[in-house]
Amino acid sequence: MFDPIVFDNLKVVIEGEVYDLDLEGHVSVVNREDYVDLARFSRVYRISFQQTSAIVASLLLTTHIDHIHAELSGNKQVKPGCLIEIDFVLSQMSKFTDIQYANYEKQLRAIWGADRMIEQRVSHLIGTNEYKNEMKIKFNRYIYEDQVDDIIEMVDYMLETIQKFNHGHG
Image 1 (spheres, rainbow, N blue to C red):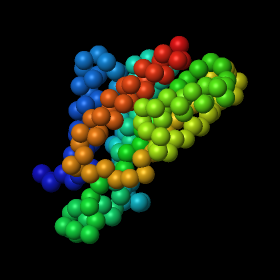
Image 2 (cartoon, helix red, strand yellow):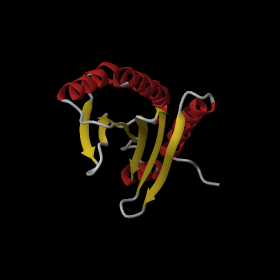
Image 3 (tube, rainbow, N blue to C red):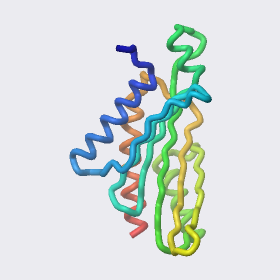
């Protein structure tokens, strides 16, 4: 048996929170990824869920060798933590408009905070009418084990975002 690192503990909280919502019928988990990147010595975990087929939400948790090493070696100069990114992918059968982009950004800032870094990237599958808007929320700070309640709140905010987008998307 190994002693779990901060990444493992936060992953278990995220996974438990999302799978509880799945079991209760509030969401459907559509993907789960758990990687160890041996080239960069990092860990990556992503869980994706949806309430409707038009919107998929994902929570991405990452940690890097500096934080893993600090925790395993007992280095007190680096506090072991992880980065979190939230993604929403909206699909529709017509082009997104500038008004839609502005509304999505406004809704994201209202829910997640005005100081968050938000990116929108649109893709189009040539030969179809399918368009996807991938929105990323980046926090640009580490989250630590003592901030577990923040992660649970993030999942709640993800649900709130999906509901807002569903209301305006439909």
